[in-house]
Length: 508
Image (tube, rainbow, N blue to C red):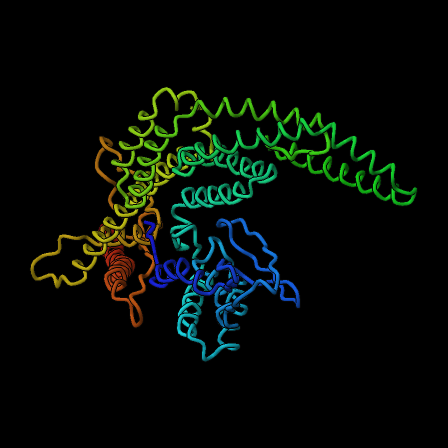
């Protein structure tokens, strides 16, 4: 379903990022033989400043005397520019089309305009090509989540899996800020995963992540709680040292902060969010949050992430089986998935049955597939019935009468009525046991007149409908018989009356 797509340039740039940084750094060689590599940030007549990397994330600025410097080696301008350019790849997850366009404009396009003859020009062109290809995907509805490109069709078909992956990615990202606001935001994402995506692989992963985030948040809250009184006293002291106007401004700013916090807290509560925002200026708020975080940590520890992961793998297979149309196998594997988690899942059974959980979503998918299968079978049966009627009518039309005609006119009319959706009227059954029928007087009788059955014509794509030949011939025959009955018997009755009159005259 989801494929890993690594662009060849990614591996090249990954290697390049480890080797190129050392090559493009400024270098200052001191007279005592010491060498400093980094980025020269200031050059004066008496001193130099160079930024040196202590670790991947920590840098230190060294101040060196000009008189102690033996040699300075600087990067070329295109090396400096390319060092910034290479950070664009690999691209981040969930980038929008506008973000890609900005990256192109300020990245490779700007570099190639400024340094068309640079030794890095070819690599910059490859980077531009990669960004354009990814931009095209985004404009066609694809999204990138970590290393995977997900099509619009998969986003729709496997919505629970994809949406939960997006939530998990956001949880990881905001937790990386390493501050209490980021940790709280991460736990909000966990809350959404737990409520709406229970049973997905992303939820199983988020459990382990939450068990790391909450203790880190707790440590920061404890520090904030210890410093709360000191910070409050410091605030009051600083405020006392201000003049009246400045003091009023500070107090107004603090009041606005309190109002904004109260309004935001009310929004969180109305939305039913457990991990509400924190007021860092209130010791009571910090203490309350510490208590809540401790309880949540204890509750989340009840989950067995390994068991949840095993269950999630089966549920993902169920999802794929449903999509492939193998509903029976999907139901069987679904039952296995519900059993695999044992007591741990049973304690959370009420959550797993919620409409937003992955388990509930899959159950609804199975039900919909079954209903669709029943409707399809019914439609096929109706189609087969209609096809049989059509063949029967075609056989009647092609019959020339030499071999005998097994299909009667009334059967053909009934077939036309069946195809057109008309309901055939039931004729009253003949009375039995009441003696012979009364002989017809020969005069036309409206009760005895047979009404022709007129069926809906069938359009066969232009010209005269061949399906109307048999009904038309039938109607003409009926009309002919009625006319014969009307005119023929009347003449015989007149002759009988004349003979009777002659016999009476003779007798007189």
